[in-house]
Image (tube, rainbow, N blue to C red; front, side, top):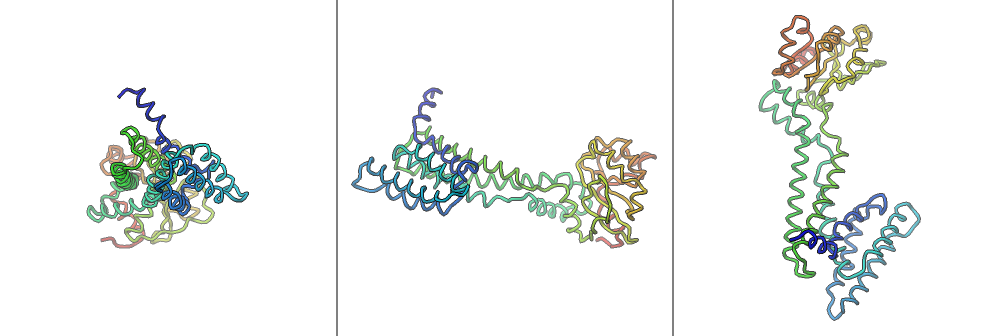
Length: 361
C-alpha cells in the first residue's frame, strides 16, 4: 500500500484521534489529566455509551444527544475557579471543537474504555521503585552462591532492578495489547480497515510507552547506595550513625562501629571519578579526630583507579574493595606499594564481621 494512500486513510478517519484524545486526557499542564479520574471516566462511558446504540433514532439525532450529554458532564466537571477547574474548562473547549460527528464520540469513548482505563490499571501494577527487585534477586544469589559473591551483587545491582521492572512493563503491555487486539477483532459496530486498527493499536503502544518512560524517570532505582544497606540487613550486621561534626566531601553510605569503638565508613560507587582529590581531604588526622579507623570504598568499575589514587588515599587510611578477578585488583594486590590498600570484595562481609567482633557462618 502506497504511503500516500496510508496517509489519506489515517487523516481521513476519525480513529486517528485515538492518539490525540489519549494525549489530551492525560495532559497535566493544559487539561489537568482528567483521564486519571477513573470515576469520571466511567461516568462518561455509563452516560453516553447506551445512547449510541439507541434504536429508532437517526445518526444525526444520536450525535446531538451524545454530544450534549458529553459536554454537559464536562461542563459540570469544570465548575469553579481553581487551577484544576480552569484546566478542565480548557479540555471542555478543546473537545467542543474536536467532536463533530457520532464517529468522533465513539472514538472518544473507545479511547477512554480501551486505552486510558487499561493503561491506568497497568500503571498501578508497575513498581514505583526498582529496589524491591534488587532485594529479592540479590537475596537469591547470595543464598545460592554465598557471601563470596558480594562482588557479583555490586556489579549487577542496577541491572537487577532495571530489568525486573522492565519485565513487569513488558508483561503489562503485552497483556493489555492482546486484549485491545481481541476487542478490535470482535467489534462489529463502527467497522474499520486494517490501517485504522493499526492507528488504534499504535496509539495505545505510544501512550503506554510515554507513561512508562515518565515512571522510569521517577523511580528511585536500585542505586549502589542501597546495596550496602541490603548487605547489612541480609547478614544481620549493625550500622552506626555518622560521626558528629564530621564534614568532608566523601559520600559515605554506611557507618559501623568496630569492637574497639572506632568507626569505619563505607562508600559504594561505580568509580572514584574526577572528584577523587576532594575525597583525599579526609586525611588521617581528620579521621583520627573523629575516631574513624578507615574509609572503605567499594568500587565496581576500577579501570580509572590509578596507582596515584590508590597510594595517595591508601596512605590516608582509605581502603579499596575491588572485584577479585579484576586486572586492577590482581596487579595492585601483588604490588609492594599498593597491596596494603586493596582488598577483594569477596572478603567484605567477613571483614566487617571481624571488625565488629562477630562470627559469620
